Length: 57
Image (cartoon, rainbow, N blue to C red; front, side, top):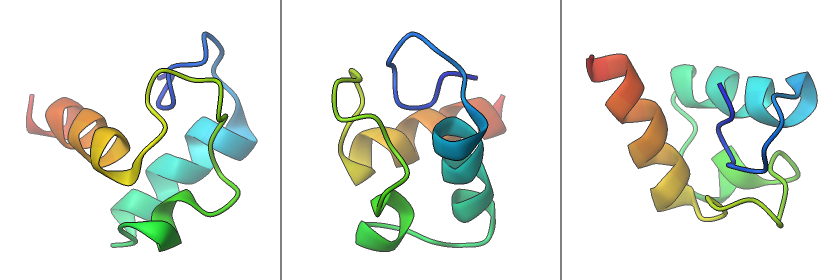
C-alpha cells in the first residue's frame, strides 16, 4: 500500500507508517521521519484515516 501517496511503496516510509499505526502510534509519533513530504497524504490525520479505512474493510 502506498500509505503516504507518493506513488511508490517503500518499506522505510509506507511500511514503517503501517507498523507504527498498528502499534498505536498517532500524531507526531506516527509521522516522525516516516513519510514522503511530496506525497498526497502528508499529515497524521490523513495517514491515520487512510490506514483506518483499509483496516475497516
